Length: 171
Image (cartoon, rainbow, N blue to C red; front, side):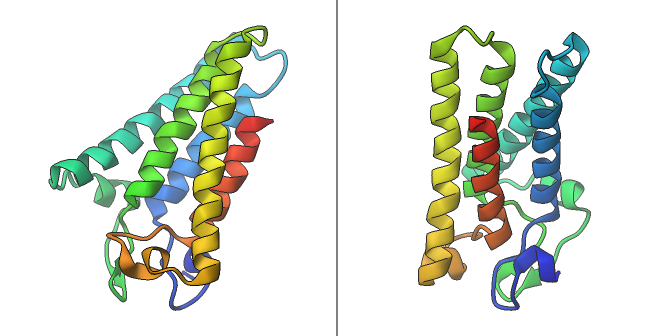
């Protein structure tokens, strides 16, 4: 709990969010080897596609207002710290995962000589980093949307991880 929220008054990181970070980070690590064996590239694409599916399902839950029970299945529990639910991925994080997984899929699916595809993937990676930096700045300034004013605020460790993930996608 201490690592998940980095303070008693801050939003905790959803266990599902942490699992999705591990999956996409693993896919990025496996797919970044040069030359990438075909099996490793395929495994990385599957991991990135699963992250894309998770992000889209979480966003569909928020947009439809329905509860598919997906967050409970992914995190294995529920509860709240103050008014912030523990087992739910924030919609901003789900959107950032969609963009990051698309960036990863573009990088994995294109040859290094395709400059346009890499520019699109790099732009998406910068977008992921910007989301993380803006949330970190929100925590620094104690903005209401970050500290608990939104539906489910993004956790401080989640924002820092998005900055790191975006940097990994850029490299």
